[in-house]
Length: 65
Image 1: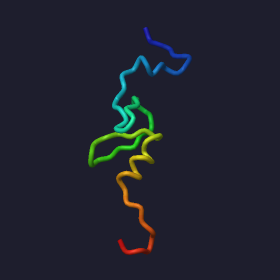
Image 2: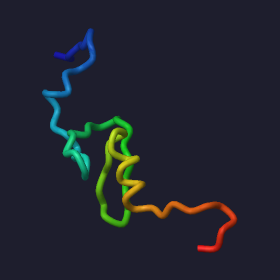
Image 3: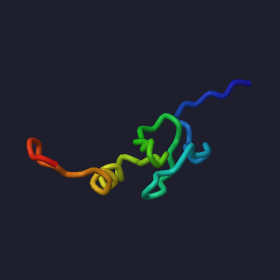
């Protein structure tokens, strides 16, 4: 028998695909996330700015660096 879902499927019934590398939030298939190829870690939308500030250099465009 085919299952019919009238409401969105409960994520708690699905196993997470991975976890955020900072906060540990569960990440499910189809969700937007950010991936760092250097560390092979995923980051959720709430943590990506924190990761970027910690791992990227802030520069002034036009200055030598």
